Amino acid sequence: MPGPTPPSRAFVLGLADADGHVEAGALFELGAAVGLSTTSVRLAVRRLVDSGLATSDGRGREAVISLTPAGLAQRAPDLGWTALSYRLDHNAVPWDRQWYLVSFSVPESARTGRDALRDYLTELVGAPLAGGLYVSHYDWRPWVHAAATRHAVASHVTTASTGSLDVGGERDPRAIAARLWPLAELGDGFDAFVGRWGPILDDPPTDLGGAARVVFAMSHDFEELVRRDPVLPAELAPPAWRGAEFRAVYRRVLATLSANHPTVARANVFSAYLASIAAAETMDDATFERWFWHETNPAVSTPG
Image (cartoon, rainbow, N blue to C red; front, side, top):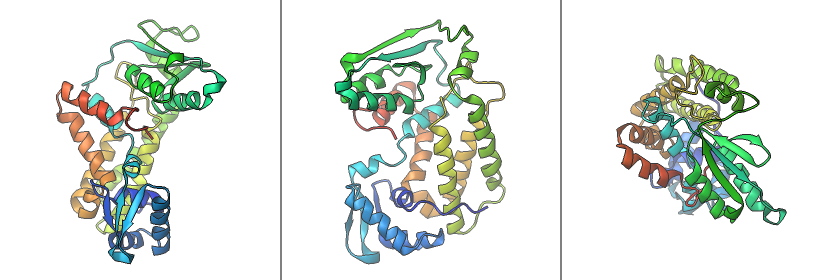
């Protein structure tokens, strides 16, 4: 089953190798295989260069495109959190039965910082309880404090934790999770993902163009769901929750197509996912925590 033509910008960012380099000739060749014209690829490269996300050394097909630090930060921005979700699938991160609250009352004079913090809490899949009050089942306080400091609003932020949360009269943790996050909608998304991409394992595309279309389209679907997934521990997930199956299908299809096609294997946006998943499963707790913080620290880079 071929995927749709990938967006040209995502195509260029995704095919750069682990160091952020990609040859223009390779971009044009694979671009043609997935339905992107030379003009659209060239325009995408020019826009990345103009926006400071990449540099170009050389001319035409001999040019080498190199992502800048800003460009590197644009790729697979949720690798750390994705790795955590795979680790959770192995019950390596049990819920501590605490709810973590963040409250902020930021004056209008610091509106930019306030809006940035609010957006960040949403990216961390924090659930709003009231105006300026958010909750998570994960101890997100280091990330919140780092983000608040970065945006110069730390003095207006309060954090707390509690083992007893009452939301509209509901105190059961699993029922609270169902009220805080759109789990039914997300569950439907997991079902659709497994149904669409799972069959690829039985009949993977043999041509590079078909494989590239699949991995780009599948990764787009994956990231759309990951960004809305609260990464629930077993204690909070609904019955028959398919989060682990959804992630397993993505990993298996990506690994299969990477094994069959070296160009896919070299593309950082795909190889980095496989590496981060392996890291989640093989590191000891202390090593993983250090790696995880480095990957997700908002004082270093802003999650996507």
